[in-house]
Length: 289
Image (cartoon, rainbow, N blue to C red; front, top):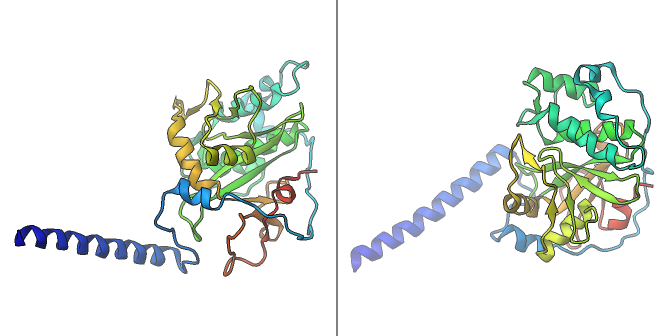
């Protein structure tokens, strides 16, 4: 009995020592830990911070969308013009064709974007890494292609609770020509519809995850050609939809002083960067003019 008790005590002590080392390592790697990860399930944390609050923050910058730019020559080698041949009677078709263009020609990997965030710069960065880039690079390409075709779209950084964080996800927020809002995730060749077949926006995705309601992924959703794992994706995004960050400007630049971040009610930004505009108003954040 005494031996069993010693083993249990040793196990408990070892657990807390290991946990302490992990926390110290995290602080060492990340610098100052402003907000650590609490000890609870991600979905429970998201539900605890599910609500927003309308605020009276004044808009520093109106949303800016530069639409209809000419296609750069670098797209010719990827047969871009073939993807532009969509049914003129279906205005939304070009959106999904651009998603296919990105996923047919580029793949997801952890390589960060180098050489600038313009469309040409991101594609050249992909070419240096076997046509691979991270989720941000894929979303930068897709958002700019959509704007070239006259469609309002922007890349959105989906962030977790903690700050600093070691992982986030970047997707595209798009206003379809038909008038509906939709989230496009080029990492997974993905978009969702609800039970009525209507497109699901990023804002709605957060609400559906919190409510525990199922969504419908497009049939050709995949990760680098492999099968799409719905359960994994929902669990992954339950971590990364606690807060959202976007740029006022749609020229694919990441000017730090043109960023706006949507945070939930009760989420403190004490110690966070001061040149990002924080808001708890979803109407303010999701307004794209």
